[in-house]
Every structure is written in C-alpha cells, then in structure tokens.
Image 1 (cartoon, helix red, strand yellow):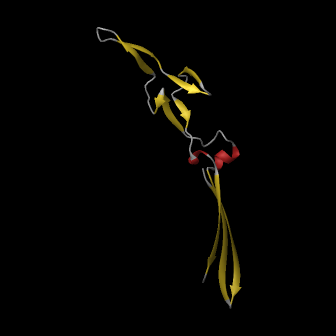
Image 2 (cartoon, rainbow, N blue to C red; image 1 turned 30 degrees about the vertical axis):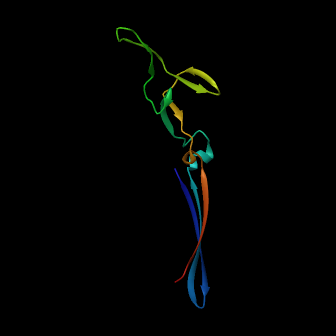
Image 3 (tube, rainbow, N blue to C red; image 1 turned 90 degrees about the vertical axis):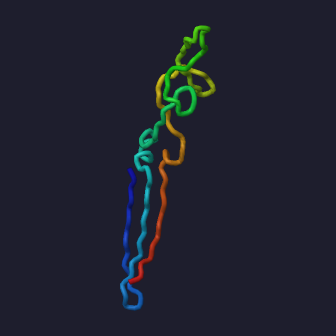
Length: 106
C-alpha cells in the first residue's frame, strides 16, 4: 500500500493565477508502520528458488534414490527445512519516501 499527500498553493504572478504543488509519496507505507508488513516472500528449499522439500542423498546400486529432508542455512547454522518460504531481501521490501515540487504555469 502506498500513500500520497499533496498540497496545492495558488499564487498570482503578473495578474495570472499559477499553482505551486508540493507532493510527498511513501512507497510500501505498511512497512513503515510495521517492519513485518509489506515484505515479500520467496519459495526456497535447500538451494535458491528450489520448491522441492526433499533432496537426493544418494542412489542405490539398483537405481532407487535415498531421500532426505532439505536444509537451509540460518545464521551460519544448517537446519532442516521448517518453511518453504523465506523473506525476500531487496529494495521493494522496505519503505521509501520521495518529495516532489511542481510549478504549474497558467
């Protein structure tokens, strides 16, 4: 969710009414209120963008695979996959603000 606040001020220059506009935009406003809101999630399992919760540990002589639960690394420690989603880390997951000024000639 994004938020925009805009204010227009009217001024007369040479007998003509012109507009001075100030605008503030907050992108990902929900994340500004609470850092848990507005955060994207991506599917992960073992390796980046792999949605399979099982990995092949080895293959027997007759061709049957030995499977094991996928793992992921958290804080330098390898743990079993406890969720197929992790928070994505990029600029779109944090709030951003921009300020704009515009002068409109009439």
